[in-house]
Image 1 (cartoon, helix red, strand yellow):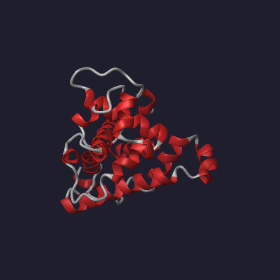
Image 2 (cartoon, rainbow, N blue to C red):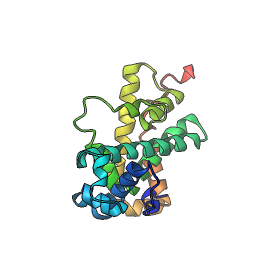
Image 3 (cartoon, rainbow, N blue to C red):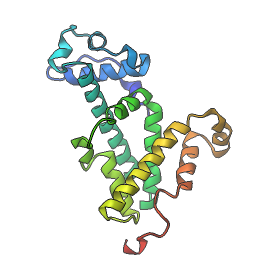
Length: 211
């Protein structure tokens, strides 16, 4: 279900202004686009004074970092849920890929902000290393499905899985695939079929005897 559909403005409680501002920023991003985002616009959307956001964010960039962090947390939760609902370790990876693509499709502006904030980093933010993060969930799913646990191989496999889902999130919007989607039974069936054709990101038979 689309998260932004439930982002209706709500009164904030004492101590919750920072999150209220982040949610206001997300609403502006999804409805009006990045160009409309400013601390003043966020204050207006959240129903607070123009000066209020400056108590939590020194500038727009810091606000965008908070918005991106919120997005990564939400994506991690979606990935964890998809993995938990899988009926096998192998299908867990496909479930994760589907959840990733659907998240990207349902939150396009947030998704862009998340990746824009990663481009100039020399290392992943701390929250990306948490057990609940999407990245860690993918690593664990790859190992559980028979992937090579060697750190370098695991990192390569995780990058490959992530890139596959990222690319599919972009290409799944192409109108030329509408007929194929319809023949397969809809958007999710289309996404799942493509991920299955990628081989669920693991070389067939690799290290399966160890699990």
